[in-house]
Structure formats: structure tokens, C-alpha cells
Image (cartoon, rainbow, N blue to C red):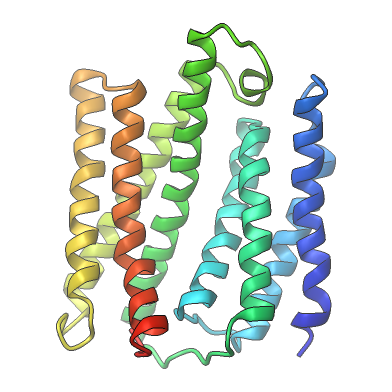
Length: 265
């Protein structure tokens, strides 16, 4: 297997990309994108290729494999976001985290074999992974938005403000991402209702309940934004609450089933 030999190059490129972006912010320079984003793009391609190789080209939903896959997709989405709205701080946070999760999957996680899944379950899982990935970007942006608002209130016109677009544009991007993630989460729940036959036998009841509560939280946030113009701390808190519920619904459940109870969930 080539993954243990090639993975250091992808990990190094992730870290180099984040380092270049962080250095630019510290030195009060205009935020560069071409060089660090090129490094990150190559890292994402290598990450994706090695994940496919390590997991036999199939969708592996075991705990560490799924974490690595989500990290890869989140990094790819960070690149897409930066094509339209250069946000260096996103890369500073996302790329090192992707490097860590990729390294854990390659070097520390026990080898796993993808389960044989029907196409319906694969579709359901794909919607879920995309929803988690999009909402991961949204929650990072929500945290950056909170820092941006605090910096403006305290008149600290430093790296945080340089790393982000104007406040209104950051908010607009945040809610577009949340709306996209909400739509994908809706498809996840709908496909689960249609394709998953026995929630209790498959240890999915906790995932389902937590996912529905998260869906309600994000739905309330979007409705409040549309009808009452919710923004600022309330929006950030609701986005964080929904995301934590979503993490618990999948990765929290997977952690308990696989690493604590040693079952396949």
C-alpha cells in the first residue's frame, strides 16, 4: 500500500498552505491565495486518492475513515469558497485539521474494510457526508464571524478583519452555506426514511433523533433569519448548537459503537 509513504507529502502541503496563510495575516500583508491554495489543492487531490486506495475505492463509514473523508471534502469546499470569497482564515483552521485527521487515519487507525452497501444506503450516506461537510465550513465561518464582530466592537482592526470579507458579505456567505447544508440534511433524513428499514436493529435511533433535532435547529435559524433578520450572537449560537447535535448524531454515535462497545454501527 502506498498511503503510508505518500501521505507525508499531502500532510506537509496542508500544513504549508496553512502556514503561508497564517504568516500573511501576521505580517499585515494582503492575503495571498494562489500559492497556498495551490498547495492545498494538491493536498486535497492526494488525500482523496489515498483515501480511495486505503479503503479499496469504496465508501468506508468506519469512525476514522469517515473523519478523514469529511476532512477531505471540507478542505475541497474551502478551496471552492475561496474562489469567490477569499477567506484566508478558513484555510488556517481547516487545512491543519485535515492534516491531523488524515494522519490519524493513515498511521494510527486500525485497518477497516468498507461494508457492502446497497446503492440506496450509499446515496443516503453521501448526502449525510456532504451535509456534515458543508455545515462544518459554515460553523467555522460562524466562529470567524463572531470574532469579526468582537473586533469591530472593540475597534481592533487587525488580522481578523483582514482575513474576512466585510461583515455583511461574511453573514451572507454563512447563511448560504447553512441553507445548502440544511437542504442536504433534509435529503439525508428523507433518504433515511425511505431506505433504512429498521432503525433499532441497525443502532440508528440515536443518530436519527439527534439529526432531526439538528435539522429543526438549523430550520429555526433560517426561518428566524428570513422573518426576523436574526444575526450576530444568536445566529452563531444556534449554528453551533445545531452542529454539535449533528456531530453527536454521527461521529458521537460511531465513537461509542466502534471504539467503546466494539460494534459496527
